[in-house]
Amino acid sequence: MLILGSFPSTASLAAQQYYAHRQNQFWKILSALLEQPLPGLDYPVRQQAVRAAGIAIWDVYGECERSGSLDSAIRNAIPNDFAALQKSAPVLRRVCFNGQRAGRFAPQLAALGFETLILPSTSPANASWSFARKLTVWREGLDISGEVARFACRPASADFE
Image (tube, rainbow, N blue to C red):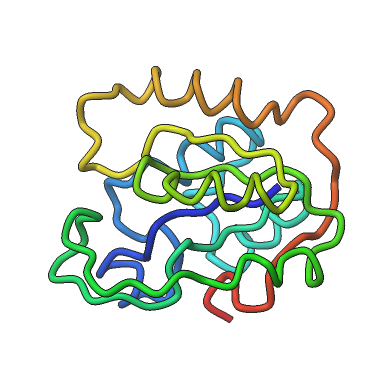
């Protein structure tokens, strides 16, 4: 499974960590789904736990111009090479999008043969959704407790490495 955001926030870029903004609920949601204390773990340990669960994290945009961290401020964006996923991650089946902006790429990835799902953004900008409501939708969408394959499907440029 691959979770695609739009592009890292300024806090994430500064920390060189996905979802580093302290108010972003991404790690809190994955923590509840994986039943692990992810927010309290060092980032490399968090990455390892997520990979062990068969989840990769990446973004739809490889480059963009943006003032601040809002998706609505993204300009001149260059998408990542999704076709390369089929070669670099041959067992990848499901691609989930963290929010509507990233979800604009769902048709492209579906055309490549991936199962796609747009989930509510974990960003603090998505304040109209409560944590409980986001968690419910993410739990249903990711189906972590179900038959999610345990495979490593990390693109080479994922996780800021």
